[in-house]
Image (cartoon, rainbow over all chains, first blue to last red; front, side, top):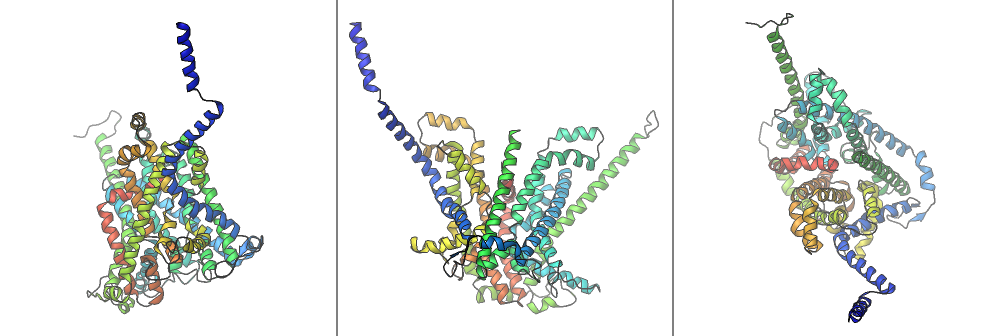
Length: 317
Length: 299
């Protein structure tokens, strides 16, 4: 009796078990079925990302070896665009302008924003009011900010020159002279970006444990010393991240140039993106625009990977 | 009544001095802060003045701070002689559509990356992360060509001078997916696992458990995307050539080209464009502040 029972169990087991082939098929079917909801969730984004980001990225690399293509047929020219990049005066000038702009803008806006964030952090009363007030320029699209700056810096109608005139000073040529024009654009971007970086650094400062600050206070460290010896070192990783993000943002300088100076006077405010835009849509030397785009692309991707790789390492520690 | 310290230091005097320097310091701080508030808000407020004055009076000397008459001609010109209203409606259509579409696809994709397992997940996420900050400017040419060619394949839905061509390419934001994934990962896993064991489908878990908890993240991302597209200039400039699809930023820029001397109209246009967003901001300032920092700080 026990013998037959055992047999029965064995037979059942064999019926239930799958052969290797069947097992493999079932496993892949199970895996595939698991992929269906994944594709449901990820599909829409993945489709759009592939079509409007991944494909254009690869396409732009191909384009950089071509010329034409916007109104006529594209023509393959090999490394010609790339080899001509550094001998193009306007591009070199644009790179130089963008570099000067990026350095001055980031240095100014960071030092101002750190100072203001420090002041706000130690003067709690009315903090919210100041946050809101400093935020206003961020609400103004760069194009409108450019218009607003016309009313400040226009040679004849700008309020600054009108006041200078009324107080018997010489009028300043903010937009029609070099390097004034570039500096005006820097001040526009600083004006617009300041509120953002204040909020950014304030969030960073507020994340510093207060017992660290209190201990230093008891030890008799003054506010400047506390800022230099405690706040700054604790903020350093965040600061590096901020610099990279700011580099990426500022490399895209275009809107204010288009509104305020159109690249002038005498190429004094041409930026990299302005250069790309002008080459593409004024239909002159399109190949150079293609190659420059890829250059910009590489810079941005490398900086992004650096920023987040760095940040990832920090959060692991 | 001064209490002398054994060594001879007047403690009360010391405290008084300390309070005095502290007050002086804080007064100085508030002065500096006030100065920056003036710098931030002043230029925006100043635009009110030229908006209510005739253009030729803008060049008047001595300078006029306040309009002496309440001249409405600039606004009238803007509303009757230009397509300002059309541009405004287009901007709303554009920014709202991009916001809604990217909110949907970003939360879905964020959920997939945070809570689902599939082969190649890490690699794919790495690829998407590398494209996190790729600007429109760097892909201007291929995206333009792509949209132009898509016209044929999408039966005119996505093409030059169409809303599809304007909106769809702007909905791809790896940053949004990244933010949503980071947020979902901070949600308690227990709830999710309990629902899973009870046999709930991913879709049910997503809609019944995760989505209700995501309200703050969705609002923050929504404001972030809307503000970005509201201010967008380069892409609309490239992709639209007609007033039917033109948005405010591009429209006002063309106004500058057409009426170089008519600065009053430009001031009125600037004012009319930023006034509504400032109103909205004053109502929802807490969310705006979060949204602006979230883009960079939400790690």
